[in-house]
Image 1 (cartoon, helix red, strand yellow):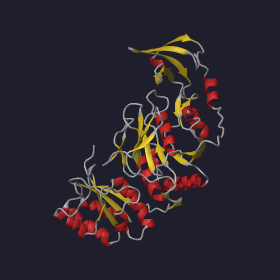
Image 2: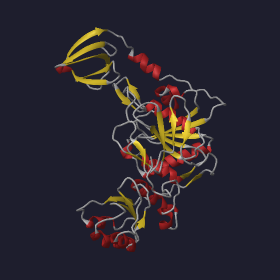
Image 3: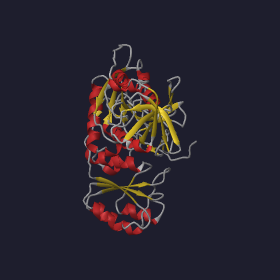
Image 4: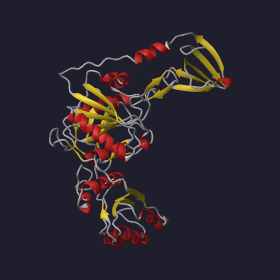
Length: 414
């Protein structure tokens, strides 16, 4: 039995038909099922029947994947594809049968051939990390790379990023960069070897958006469970609200900025946006990393704040209108008195902070807390990190919308 053979595997009451893929361990058999999924089976616990030999030439498939040609078309816009990791440009590694992430412009076109003819592409790797390993220094590297790509003439930038912390990176770019062209984050909830992968549609819609007129930092992901359209979310107003659904991302407190119809490739906007060419390219990538986000919960020991007494800034995720237990107030007062900027946000998904309604809120304001308006807690943390290195008046800066992170009014919407 060799890679490329078609086999039937019986294990207990389960039976699988598929093509043998190379395995990274001798104890396990990797089979590519007709559904497109891979399955691993313990060789010793399975009965194997060869149905047909050498029906799939793995070496030829791997060679075919390694060959591509990108031609420049002066009539097409140029889009820079920047990778930080994630699965959107991943392909099956036929040596191991696993999904691997290798990235340059050719890799992306191999993984998503539908992108051919939409634009001229430049590929660039900033990092190859899991989303949860994203750090502020990578944000700085990413901002610098985007700046250089736009300065070199890119008509738009697509950032391929793991989904778990994409909203934080998008917020960081929104504050670090004044961009005259679109900067579009996209990713994939499901890997390229799965039939339900969302990598193709997300990538196509992201590139289409990168050539649009909206010079915003946006996140482009599935609008719903179908494969009809991608939603465009402003980078400072979005959060990932589901662990695994393809439409995991939602704009909080408003409708998405726009949408891309996958069939027609039409990009439409529902809300006002900054138009292409409105601002000059500028980079403001200094950032203060000594900032923490602290979530208040009932029963939480206020002494936990003593751990942060030497921090440059803290964002509190309070209850309701922006409250914490009254026992916390003296600790907050100590923090602000020692020079730590404390910003209050709400753990509610909708609405805004208002610490002028109840005694607790007024006491927090007297203790020096800065109201975070209706900013998302994660966005508020990123903004405070940026503001501490780029702004003279922190309360005024945190209360002013710089990249659409604060809305003028918090109203119900449908």
